[in-house]
Every structure is written in structure tokens, then in C-alpha cells.
Length: 240
Image (tube, helix red, strand yellow):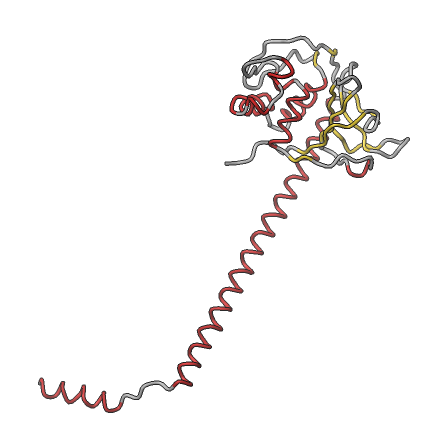
């Protein structure tokens, strides 16, 4: 039996012929070709996936801005007295009395109508990044205050810069789209804020702005009435 096995091995060794250089090169070229094809396919799949995600995100953002502009317009049907008093409110989801408020309260209420609590989002960021906000320098505060921090325009400006998108400030009305936020200096360092909506002014053709400058929420053609100090988009907290 051992002899038969040995003779079989000997016969194989006698019939074995090592591959030629040309054959080895041919195999190597085939492997390289298949590798390139696999890499190209993988790259195509990654690019396609990124494109689909990007388009889905863009569509979601556009729908969010449309909804935000719509609820801002709806706010103009509410009667609100301009009251700037400091008020202790609950946290989170706290609000001053519904028939009172200032310019920032229209922003807060509009965002809350689409499911985003700016009181909570601003407070959490100030707690963790107090030095980034003007609380100490402007109001001599030593700690965050969930009753008032989110109701101050300078704080909202910092928050939108940190957590949203800061957009260009221009004198072209077409650069300001529905759902975007605009801040102004009314003069003497008095800040103001409003939301751009999708209703056009019959006089200038500009997108109108919903804001409260003293007579409750109004939709007016005031985009360029004062010096613009900020221009932002904010879609809400990013998912972890």
C-alpha cells in the first residue's frame, strides 16, 4: 500500500508543470482588473448612498422651513400685548402668559409649534458653554437662567451661530428665504428678531417678516427697515 502511494506521488511530480511567467502575469492582470472593478462598484455605491441621503435631508429641511414659516404666519392671528417683564416660568416647555410677550417669544412659540423647545435647547447650551454667551458681560449674570436666557436676542444670536447655520447678510431680498431668522439693530444697540415668511409684499416684492415690535405679532415688509445684524437657519437639535 505504501509502495502504491509512493508511486502515485512520483507520477504526479513527473506530470506537474509549473506555470509560465506569461501565465502568472495573466492571472495577476485578471486579479487587478477584478479588484479595480470591485473598487469602482464600491465607490459608485457610496456616492449613490451619499446622494440619496443628501437629497432626503435637503427635502426634509425644505419641508421644515415651510412649516416654520406657516406657523409664524398663524401667530399673526393671536392678540399679544408687548410685555417685557421678567417672569418665572416652568422648565422645560415654559412660556410667559399667552397674551403677552416680546419679539423673541414669537420665535420661541413658532419653534415650539413645530416640536422644538428653544427654552430647553438654549438653556442646555448655556449651562455647558456659559462663556460663549454675553450673559456675564451684558447682564452681569454668573449662571444660566432658564426663565429669561432664551428670551434675549443676543443669546439667540449666539445659539443660532453655534447650533444652526449662519448665512450671509446682503441687501438682496432673494437671499432671505421663508423660515430663516433675521436679527436687527433698531438703533442705539436695541436688538430685534423676526422670521421670514413666504408671503410677498405687494409694494416691494420682498418676502414679508413676522415679528413683534410692540403691537403683537405682525406680518410686515420690514426686512430692510433696520440694520441687519444676523441671518440664520435652525432646523432643531441634531440627532446623536
